Image 1: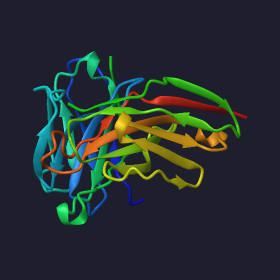
Image 2 (image 1 turned 180 degrees about the vertical axis):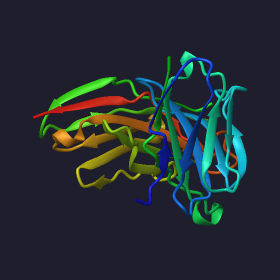
Image 3 (image 1 turned 90 degrees about the vertical axis):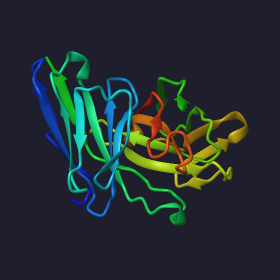
Image 4 (image 1 turned 135 degrees about the horizontal axis):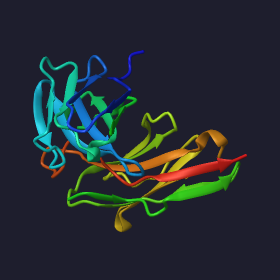
Length: 119
Length: 119
């Protein structure tokens, strides 16, 4: 399977604990995105990377959230001191950005998500 | 700021009926892409169609067609001869095309429309 993969698929934790999620993008993709989706809502953008550089962060990404993509390949999203409001599906997507010469279009392919439940 | 509105929360049809999903968007950017994604019960977002802002030609792809009207900021999606397997949540999304845009890189999603196709 050469699609976007995420691990774990499900995570149940107690309030106050730290959790870390991993995303493995499609191998040649240089962009990686994190989104959060709560029940009954559309995904909301959290942050994205071009290679190892984090280029944009949403206001939704509080100080308790940190994302890394150390070698420009896989990425991790860590939530510290989890709260019940953090319960959501965390989606990762990747794309190949070829710049303006290619028309600027880069379709995002999504992974299956990690469903977080904070008790 | 960008915004996508899907006014229909749920739609229920009988198999073989045609169904249209509505989408209205707001953006200050002059160049952007519009998308429709499908999210089946498994949770993974599946790309369906995209349209760029400078091409208002409407197209048909198999059982899918879309009606893009820039004058009314609408991007409606039609499934012809619906099937039970079309049952899913459908999301409309918006993305700026160039780095000069206000929200370059990220997708802004609507709230989603739950489509149920009964046999």
